[in-house]
Image (cartoon, rainbow, N blue to C red; front, side, top):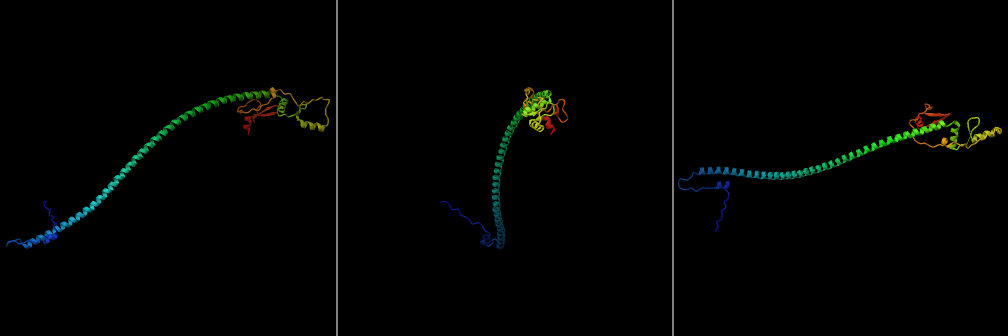
Length: 256
């Protein structure tokens, strides 16, 4: 049968204070010395118990602070882990953005080089075409100027006027004395006022002149003539042929 463990009550200062010793024989302990010693033990033991209680309370308080610090440390580690995860994710996103931007920049640079080369080729082609057209226009202008100069040189006053009348379908009366021509309306009015007709002179007026088409056919010409120069041009850029003023397109532009 197992022996029961006897639980001894912890010794208290009161137990020490109440403790009494039995006297044995004639020569026992001095009662006063024993009581004085027991009083010292009671005081010191009571102080020790108070210190132990204070230390236990302090331990409990420190344990609470330690638990609080442990909780803060755990929270700090959680925040640190989260922050590290955010930093890692941000780095990955930044690297991806940089890589994508680099690809886009390289593509745009390559495309810009291609476009620049294409535009340069186009510009060279345009310059070449411009010079070619410029030469063709200059040659055509010189050709037209020569034709005009020859036509003007071959025209006389009356032929020039008749050519214009023929072109604009104007009926005009040309007096035999070489005076200024009159339109058909003016000539009829003059004849009606004088009421005399010189029948002896035998003047025949032909209002439908046969004009050589090679000299008097007129065509409208469009184009620039920036460099027209020939004898007989005054300071206003007008060509005088038999008291007639001819203004070329560029001369008109320069004077307006």
